[in-house]
Amino acid sequence: MKKILTALAIAFIIPALTVRAQNSPYSDDERYPVFGQSSAPEFIVRQIKLSTGVQLEYTEQGDPQGIPVIMLHGFTDSWQSFVPVLPYLPASLHVFALSQRGHGNSSKEATSYKPEDFAKDVAAFLEQKRVGPAVIVGHSMGSTNAQCFASNFPALTRALILVGSFAAFDKPVIHDFKKVIDGLNDPVDSLFIVEFQKSTLTKPVSAQRFQAIVEESLKVPAHVWKGVAANWASAGYLNSLTNFKKPVLIIWGDKDAYCPKEDQVLLNNALSKSTLLVYEGTGHANHWEEPERFANDLIEFALNLPANKK
Image 1 (cartoon, rainbow, N blue to C red):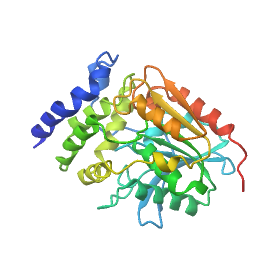
Image 2 (image 1 turned 180 degrees about the vertical axis):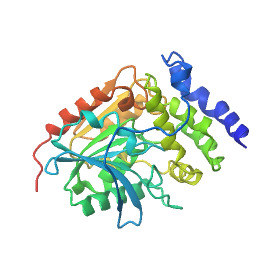
Image 3 (image 1 turned 60 degrees about the vertical axis):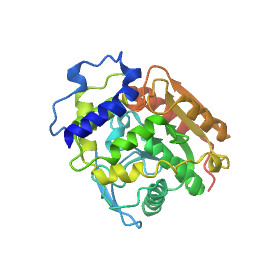
């Protein structure tokens, strides 16, 4: 079965997703690190049982009186997706990086992986932590969940930062990717995961960082991969986002193999108070490739928001 999945990945995903990264500066060693237990920088990691029934893993930093920031990772990642960024963020930002349901060391529900389910978790988290309206930062899947959250919980949303975002999922590369996902079984093939995460990058990250990324994806069981992908066809929030009148920062890498420029333009046009930043030469995971720049853009955006109306 693993050979079949690898063949499918090569047939469907790898040609479509790596065509833009053929001139990547990675060496084979950097692209294919030795698997093993990696150690993330030291963060205080906690668990919280939410009113939605799930238990979420998260890390928290910054002044409790600072501007609340919620960070939502991409597909099969975890809170550790933001490890490269967190050290650059000041104490004036009260940051929570979550492992969303089904991911990292959060609970793996049998069902319920619609963006609305993820959004309800964020709302429950804010309520239970007694945190006011927050800046919601979402990457990839997390960006879709952030769009859903802002559409359904605008009073809890102070601003949005959308990173590597989809306006819709009706794209051949996504259809092909879902075909492969539908054939996954546990344990999900590690080579498949390596190729998937490899396809999100254009610039190099360290071998240790890439290893940690892969190890977090290995925690995600096949039913979660399938559960998230099953809801892609119905996920789209452009119409509802036209009613969202708060500041939005859209960050996109022009070598993104998943999210085309057209999606960024659609989002930018739908959102009345949005700014589009283009990172030249970066891929889908630009916060991994240029974490300091990403952090600086986040800081400038968050610290210059209009005063929060109580």
